[in-house]
Amino acid sequence: MSSNQSDGAVVTGAASGIGRAIAASLAADGFSVVVADLDEENGRAAAKEIAAANQNRAIFQRVDVTDRTSVSAAIDACTRQFGTIKVRSTTLASTSRNRSSRRAWQPGTRSWM
Image (cartoon, rainbow, N blue to C red; front, side, top):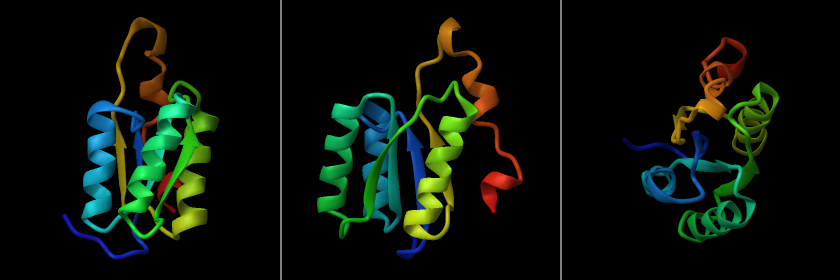
């Protein structure tokens, strides 16, 4: 998948592991990336590393995927910083504690505008 500089991507769980690899891969393909995670320390480090390899087109946004407002803030950060959002990737561990995350990250009309 390739992109132009105005295409944004929000990747949850991007502070480490598979999420971080997805964010880095999207950046390598030309996407501007929002590294979205609860883990601020590793999330900021991931965003800094990705930005260094991607013309500073990566930012960190603290996101709790169980909270719809938090998810909306990440989407808003992407559109505000990069103009559009073309990709949303949800990479998180599902436990009984965060089952409501499925509802928070479901696509809605507003999130794609």
